Amino acid sequence: PFFVGSGDDFTLVDASLAPKLFHMQTGLKKFKADSINLSADFPALRKYMDTLFARKSFVDAIYPEETVVWGWSNARNQS
Image (cartoon, rainbow, N blue to C red; front, side, top):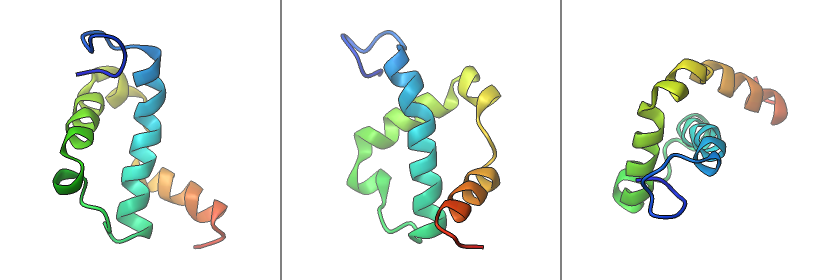
């Protein structure tokens, strides 16, 4: 289910994409009112994200959504 090669092994590509996809998901929810339905419009991407987000390494390392929103709000000059 992973990005590189046969997809059997978690690689640095997956490790790099996971937080970016988490930021995208959080941003879509907060700033774009869930304007893109990932489950319906991009089911393979949603499945990939769910796989990444379920990994213990991701769960142990990810910031809370509120922190992501705070950071992007500051970057967008919004409160």
